[in-house]
Image (cartoon, rainbow, N blue to C red):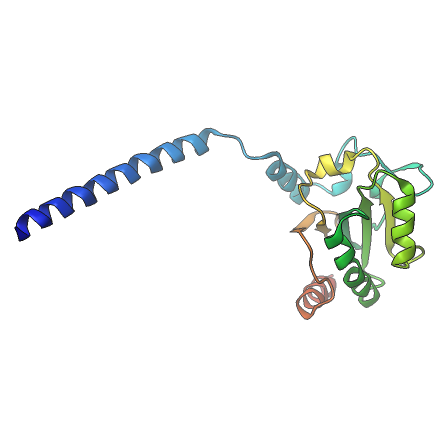
Length: 194
């Protein structure tokens, strides 16, 4: 009786391992031949090429003039932040971004790219948070979502941190406290390097 239980247990265990092995082989085959998501290619591109090299990216200033994001923040650390006035998490994180800017006025520029469909919503949001005229904060409008498509933005808020050379250092998805001790320490470490 005891021997038959052991034999049954061994057969079941062996069968489970065989099924898991076949499943693993199938998953391995399926994913080794599939291409990486587009967002991986964008990140890889941005790690090797300055963000200014993204082609076909049309953004607008708040006078609705077409501008090139490469014209902002040269020689500084750049945070490209995708947001919208209707995005509650975006509203939650903006005050901490302003605190971060105040800590590093000579080193960091934030390019805030709005997903809003109406310019008046951007202006209302800007007035509510006293964003207009903040040094090193560039409010732009991703009116046709060209920048969002180029960066493969999937969720708001979403931010990209670029070094002084314009190469991607880090992608941040979701709300962050940009002024907590860890964030300040991270940017102190970055800005101390020459």
